[in-house]
Amino acid sequence: MTPVTSRAVSHSGAGESGEEMIPRYTLAERINHWIGAGAYVYVLITGLAFWSPYFYWLAAVVGGGPVARLWHPWMGIVFAVSVFWMFKEWYGDMRIDEVDRAWARAISHYIRNEDEQLPPTGRFNFGQKLFFWAIFYSVILLLLSGVALWYTEALPWSLRYLRYAAILIHASVALITIGLFLIHVYMSAILEEGSLASMIHGKVTRAWAWTFHRTWFDKVGGGIQSGT
Amino acid sequence: MSQAATEIVRISGHAGSVPGAGLDREFRVCKLVDTTTCIGCKACEVACLEWNGYPFSQTTFDNTYQTMPETAWNYWNLIKFNEHEREDGSLMLLMRKDQCMHCADPGCLAACPADAAIVQYANGIVDFQEANCIGCGYCMTGCPFNIPKFSPAARKVFKCTLCNDRVSVGLEPACIKACPTGCLHFGTKIEMKELAETRAQQLRENSGFRDAGVYDPPGVGGTHVIYVLHDAKNPEAYGGLPKDPHIPLSVRLWKGPLKWIGNLAMLGGLVGLAWHYMRFGPKKEEEVPSDKGGRP
Image 1: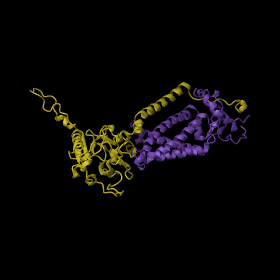
Image 2: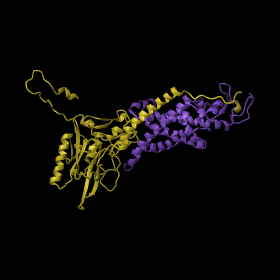
Image 3: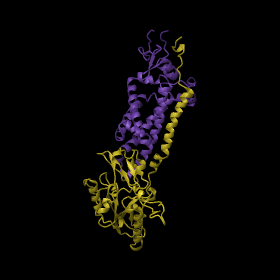
């Protein structure tokens, strides 16, 4: 193989087939993603324990109810900071445009794994953008309602309606994020081979980029011939 | 119940009726607070502190006789003093002993997520088991009376126990024991309700309080602390006693429909994703075409 000229195409990383890899996530992006993921899993486990008696045993897994109560808000803050960093980093890539609207209209093809019938997408497709924005706004709501639940005793009785609102908002929005989380984990770790690896090693195969993010493939120079 | 073994239902070879058959035993206890005979001496406040072993804490002066604005985690019994102007322009000093109401339908218990942190006994006492409390504060949101209070040092929530430790060995609560005017009574729920109604009738007929009545709010299933009020139509005048208390709507929605919708949605989500994988399988990569740099 002769070296390629594009900066974007990795020289060193080769896939299992010996194919050259395209960098997709920087080290900082990956570290931040896993900090956020770990924090989310913690607030999910402890949150489920507070949600229903049938999940209360989960609190024992992370050190018992009082410990879970103590750390749940702090881990929520870690998750929020992680998501806000993603916002700062990915805001440009997450803007919804005309292609996304066309993609949304063709979403049934995506569900049926007929990806070739979808409009070519940039670094993130409409589903990923939707996931990102839903998580972003959910985090804001969870943070605001969470502070009210964190310091219930600091809210005076005259402002008790804030307690009532917070308890409903926090649970409802958390449920929405659980749905998003399930879809996210399923798609990245099970459905779409190569996605989970890209968040660990930071690279994807050229075929992966060509199949799932064709506009991005062209943009980062994935199409530049190498070895021929 | 241990008494069940002493209650005889049938007797062999016995002529006549079974002694005590059909007896309806009343297990429910009740504290009656007659606000019309309270003199605001605060003996109940002191007795509560003494029995429960809390030191007398720093108080807040707000130009009334009231010890502090509201009950605290280590101050479960507070007389609320309220100056009230009547329709004819005359003034009344209303004094109401505030404490846990021991609701038959307790909002704190409904909201609590910790296994066995709040229990309700057959005698009606709603008791916090601090060993199981995780300090989340949901009970503070569930209570319509602003009673459970959080201790930042213990990171747990505390409130009046209705002297469960005394009642369970046949004693009356400490506050009742200390009351010098007899405005506090303790007995079965039926007895106390009758006594309260009798007193309210007296007030209506003999003392000119036309709206005197008993406060035993049905919105929380009745309470095991009941009040005689000079004006039962305006309980708010007695330091914010809610007119028609309920478990807050948001708590009922959260612990009712939302819980079931949420649990079904989570289960449905898992089933749906499993179905999707079995129906459509993994997403496969396509070969990069040769004009795009793929293998020729």
